[in-house]
Length: 124
Image 1 (spheres, rainbow, N blue to C red):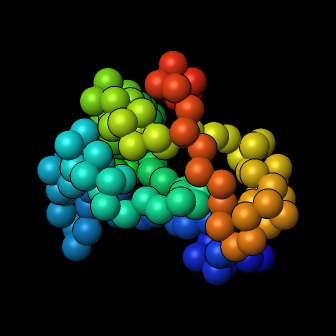
Image 2: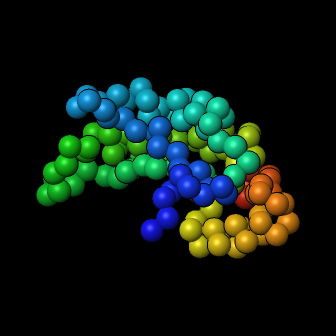
């Protein structure tokens, strides 16, 4: 299995997380915080944003329930969509990844092509 951080064309971004040392840090998961992190940390490559968003299920108890819903609210916040569009980020699925990586190595050497879609093209 390939180590996520070993790829030169993909980057694993794990800083969007709201709990460490057993304490909740919701301030780390606000729309403003995510927008700042994206601007400062994301480069011209495919970046996998690690998160565990979702709704709380009373029948499925975890130690990350509060944070899960906070992540979901942030990811659905219109300000995040605006930040993505402002910086030219494009959301893709794993379905698009093989083609994007193949094109990157043939057309750009070691760098991925910069994709700058119109804001209406940014996926929900």
